[in-house]
Image (cartoon, rainbow, N blue to C red; front, side, top):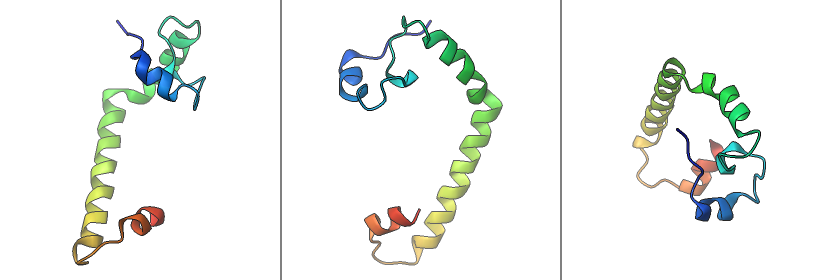
Length: 80
């Protein structure tokens, strides 16, 4: 069973993305269709691949910055 997100979260962010499933109420008429469309993107196999990619990229960036004594974090994030 799926539940509507907490009203505080909805009220904070819903205006940014009003049609997003992230902030939609569970009982909205198109919620179920959107959820069904997205479900294949988050299968166990897909999630495993996504996690492996995130791990690989994170480790690569840590190796790149490991030798630097001080990192300008805002500048580094812009470069990403």
